[in-house]
Image (cartoon, rainbow, N blue to C red; front, side, top):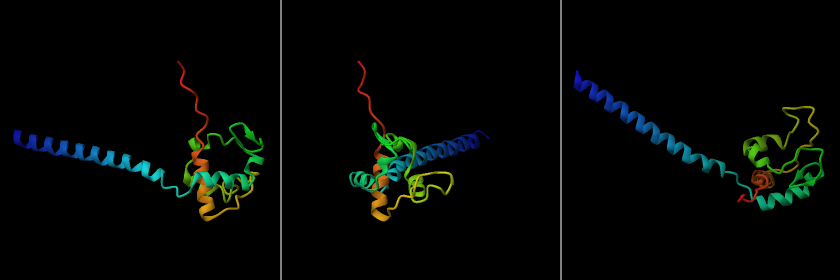
Length: 127
């Protein structure tokens, strides 16, 4: 009976360790998924300007006030949400006043990359 307990304990240990290794591998894969956005944030900034988004949206204290401040939108939204929302803002909230963003393909990829790059103002370290 003692031998059976040792074998069972050994199997449990193997399962726990392999589960932990599998979990670590999954966690390490997540950053790669986040960087799967195909766009160029520098080009996206130009698209943001060309689409005149700043008429309604503020970034770093500059722009309009009709829409939400986008200074830190990259900390609140993910790529999937932006890809779904930007072309059809009224889809989930019909009373939304934002017009659909009229860009597709690489331009949309670039705009999403730019918005995701907006992480808010960084404060200098306090001494």
